[in-house]
Length: 124
Image (cartoon, rainbow, N blue to C red):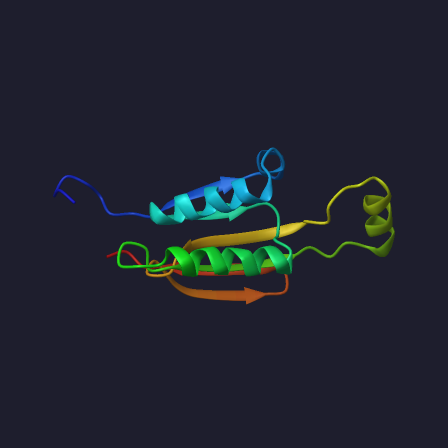
């Protein structure tokens, strides 16, 4: 990095609408590509447990010297039973929540509480 370049962390915010246009494999590719570029992603949806497992699996397969891995944290929004029933009847997937994903060397400390996430990002 040249002396004129400023160090910083790039944070990308992805809306539900943007994510809805992609299938799960495309979302995984998007996440991993951005993390490899040392970006932190904030997704306006959570991942299902099986999807989190697949994200971890893909990351482990691609991890190496140039890509040390990822850290992620998220929470699911409280959705009422009635809303879940309506969403199921309408064929909507229950992905209400938030997910933060980034490169493990940058994501120094993550504190997750019921409805909030705080992140300390490390600059080298």
